[in-house]
Length: 343
Image 1 (tube, one colour):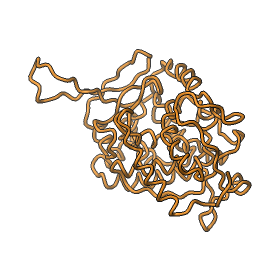
Image 2 (cartoon, helix red, strand yellow):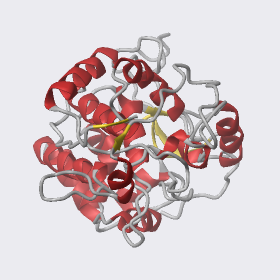
Image 3 (cartoon, rainbow, N blue to C red):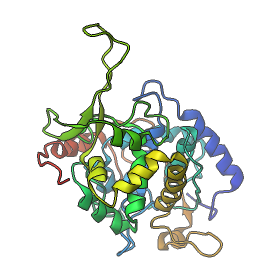
Image 4 (tube, rainbow, N blue to C red):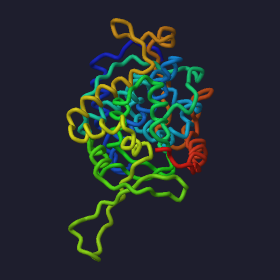
């Protein structure tokens, strides 16, 4: 549906309240949809290529198999499904705006900083503008891979480390990324703990049954006597890309600064995440989005999809339908990587 050029402040206030209300999800992961909503926005924007000015947060291309089926996006069907009741309640909002706004609200509700957000993104009407796969980070790689991915989007070394701080939130799943576990003890609270643990712990390389390598640390419970039975603490983990932040001489100083100064990290993260969400968006002096697809069709909200994360019905030519099966198939291939990271 086509409507006004931008959502109004009153409309957005209602959507923000609805997002806050849905964050608590007792049966999902650690009881919150917040972390996976942040990942949804991150991946929707992280396809941007500054040289070709393609990709980015406009269009909500993940609705289409060409982008939604990228193995790097495995599991994000859950985030999209969490937001479908809001799409039903507020049919005027575009998916592109809803996905990015949900992340900003989630970060704040989980104790993080206020992040500037501006609306006006439209939804693609077909998959012709969807960027190619392979533009998102591969956690099995090292520092040069991170630079290749993030420099393409226009970020520098400091911004790479600040964005990596989003790993304060959520966990990896073996049936999605191939990695398994959480980075910090409280993965639904936004903090600088990721940087503190990265520096403080003695991380050991571990090969998972799939052949994927990650780094792990088990925090011992000092209250348990030797030989005493008790609940075993859950392993914490780091990806090879996380460990490269320590070994790279340009990245490490920012890890150390953010570990020591939470306010500095929050300030830098808020600015760089706002920049991430604006990738691919062009605005005029008034703030109106002037991308070609926006000027052609206006603020166009795509039809609502299924409320479930598993087998939604087809919504039109090329649109994601029965998306869980192709995601699973691609992810199984993704998990077979056996090369270690070049740290």
